[in-house]
Length: 282
Ligand code: SAH
Image (cartoon, rainbow, N blue to C red; front, side, top):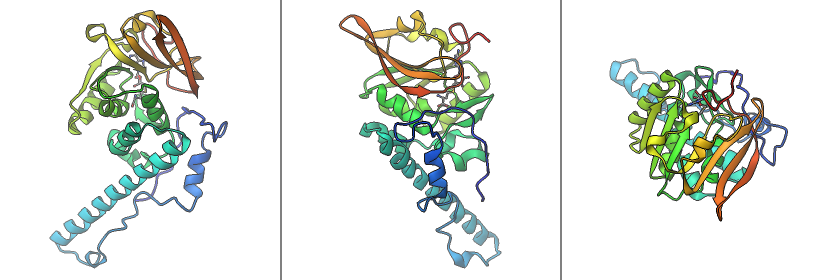
C-alpha cells in the first residue's frame, strides 16, 4: 500500500527546537534514513506468494495484516521517541500512554497510515485530531497521578480522551457534533475503554452535573476563560486550554495557589475554534 499524499490542516505548535518551522521534523522524518514506509510488509513469508489456493491466500493476507500492525506499532514507538521525548515530554506515564493507545484506530481508514505523522489530521465535520505532541503536552501539563476526575471539552474522535483515561480515574468528555460524539463512543467501546463518559452538547458551559473536576482540559480554541467553567474546578484543580484569537492561541494552565488564580503559559498553538455559548461567535 503506498502512502497517500495529503495536505495537513492548519494546527500547529512550534516546539522549542523547530521554532517557526512547524513541519521541519516531519520533513526530516520523510527524507531521513530512519524513515521507513509504514506499510512495507516486512514479515510476509515469501513461500506464500506463489500459492493461489484459498487457505494460502488467507494466510498471505493475514501475514500482510500482521505486518501492517507491526509497522504501525513501530511508527508509534518512533512517534514517542522522535516527536515527544526528543521535544521534552518527560512524564513516563504520559510517554507510556502515548505508546499504548492505538492512535490509528481513531482515524478514518484512508488516513490510518498517517496516524503517527507529526501533525493534526482531519476527522470529518471540518474538525481535527490534534498533533501527537500537543496531546502529550496537554496530558503532561495536567499532571495526572491516576486519581483524578477530568473533564475534556471537545471529544472529537476520542483519542485525547483515551490517553487521559490511562492517566486519570475518570474522564468526562463533551462534544457538540452528534456524528463525532457517536463515532467516538463506538471507537472507545470497541477498544474497551471503560472510564470515559461522553455527552453530546455545548461543552463551553462545562458539565455541571458531574462537577467538581480535578482537571478541565479544553481541546478547541477559546476566546477567553468562562467563569462557569472555572467554577466547576475542584479547589486545587487545573484548567488547561488554548486561549486567544481564532488563528493563534497560547496554551494556558490556570490553577489556584493560596487562594489566588495563577496563569502559566506553555507556548503558542492553533486549534479549531470552539463554538457555543462561550466560544467564538462567527
Ligand atoms: N480532542 C479531540 C480533538 C478535538 S478538535 C481528539 O482527540 O480528537 C475540537 C473538537 O471540539 C471538535 O470535535 C469540535 O466539534 C469540538 N467543539 C467545538 N466547540 C465545542 C463546544 N462548544 N462544545 C463541545 N465540543 C466542541
